[in-house]
View (spheres, rainbow, N blue to C red):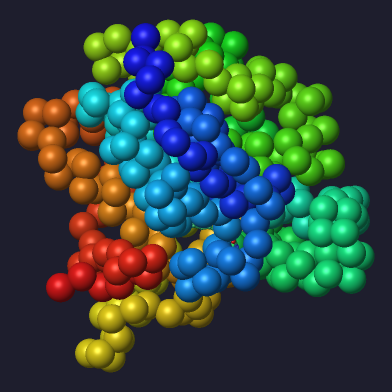
Length: 365
Ligand SMILES: N[C@@H](CCC(=O)N[C@@H](CS)C(=O)NCC(=O)O)C(=O)O
């Protein structure tokens, strides 16, 4: 049972977010799980730009007025300030598994999310109507929609791969449904940052959008049950993560459904970013937002995708954690995940390293 006074603050945390935003949906359940006093407000891009110099949603402003940006950093800062109830498992296998789910959410699940929102006439028409209703202007709503509909191609949600994206999603939802029939959360009876991360695609897009919401309601009701639990967590009433650092066999199946398509693509993206970084000029400290596109594939279908520095930053987090383990712990993690496709990513050794300078990603060293 957490100390009820621990998370008391004199002023609320401000959460600048959108209901339709993927990364807002990734952060919101973590704030709620921590039981914090939160004032959620519609993101104002002008204010976000002023505070961070970046046009990314969401941000959190602390009761003292400090700005936090980047969903992964927000998890870490929340955990440091409010360790109870915990978001980060302390045991190696569960911690690595949680990082892998987060990497899947940061990097790959964008594809089905953008496909279902923008990849059909019905999806696009309903998303445009929702954007316009939300913004209160058809003209501005459509402009925002135009930008996001194009971003579909940047993340690799290619029309030629529509069947493969839908097959991936069906397998993911089947694996998650089997898991949530047996366990309330990914790691057992307690929420972790893995659940929060997966809420990005599943709450921020799938449950928000007409076509994918129907898919969830028709084919994946246990996932909807989990989503409702994550939306309104009562951390004190939750149980514990599985004992002895175990992963449920159904979670191993879920990691496989994620890893078999995501890992080859993430490796392609990492290699493309590192090849660009090898060749960059000596004074390029901050990688640009757009580095061009690379050729990757999904189940054999060629897909173009934008190369982003963030992919390396995202993968660094699990590699850094692995680096803190001793040889025996690392071997146990690799054995447990051997069938999932993720060990190839865990074996990747980057030649470059990124760090944060304020809100900017920069090369380290
Ligand atoms: N790394 C950031 C990514 C945030 C992000 O991409 N947010 C989207 C909305 S869900 C956004 O603001 N996109 C605007 C853009 O890409 O220009 C995080 O984890 O918070």
